[in-house]
Image (cartoon, rainbow, N blue to C red; front, side, top):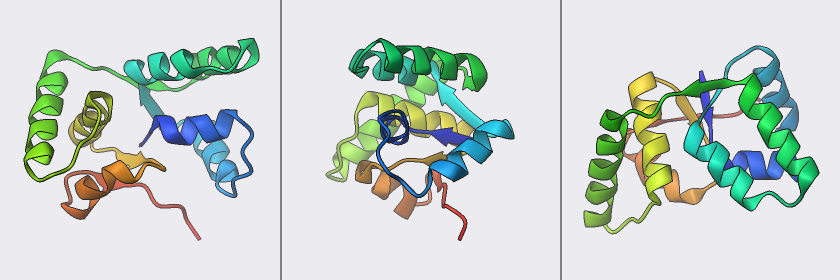
Length: 131
């Protein structure tokens, strides 16, 4: 399963020309994409109109939504604090995404360099495009 970050969805919805869009579509069709509910809120918050808002809502109805229980929020807080002590700052939603990916055994697909310390330290598996 691939947990897809906000940064990927923004480019996907905004018709930015990306070579990886075909890979994301394949993963969507095969049911291998997951998101978390706070990510839906993030996307809706930044939506650039009714069409984009509608696409986001359609997405949220068509992919697996990993739950975000208190235990994942606690892990997100611990992870964020640990990273901050190392000089890295991630948003709490990014920390939550990482905590959920860890717990679910999912790889994380992001375009955001803020996740690099997590990948380098082996705390989260980074999704890599084939080819």
